[in-house]
Image 1: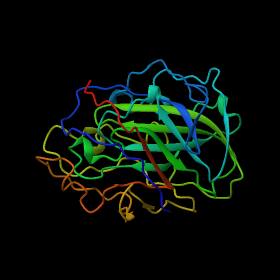
Image 2: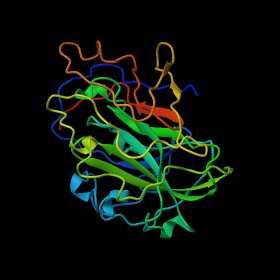
Image 3: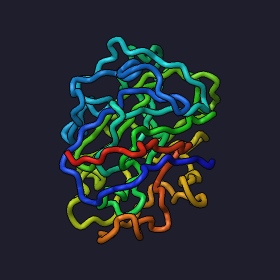
Length: 292
């Protein structure tokens, strides 16, 4: 499935950022934002602050610290639609690291569901080049993460969990969606949250500011819509020919780069470890780059 990525215009720096806060609090449907902030995304007590690795074994890993359904509305979508979450205030993802979407089917009304059931991964975006550089990640400077719901996804109400691991911190939000027009697929592998990660996982302890090296994507394989885990898709950069993503779970070897960070970084795979039905990463053209 060929998809297009919208790329930032210019001016990326290779220097690691010190701190940056971003939250995914606006639902995206078929490429457009729907509703306002937290209309369809559950609020949490963390505000725009990230969660840190001390929540890996906590229920807070599901949807962020202090999350409550409260008055969150549930949005109707169809299997095969494009869905995703947008960064608040037209900001960007300002940390290097991978992005993910997980889903968990509620036994009934998703508004009363706490996420204690099974979860499966439907999308991921990993290293696009040297993982110890900002530009070595497919999510760098994105304003939204989006993917296509598998056509075989069973009907029902779901928590849609967006996660960006900023190497040393987690940015997590959950939206509530109701899927119709789906099929009889069997999402897998199934995991529990917490339980999907360990504090010793290489993905959570990777030293971005150290020697670099390969980065191993955490969590289960991506479910692509069949009876088991999914296979990689084809993606199309904004310019040039389509390139095939590597097999899921294959680490991308990174080496420190010097000089122009945009030269020699694609490692033969400029768009990384995107899985599931990859739709893309929306980016802000003409953004104001900042550190902090």
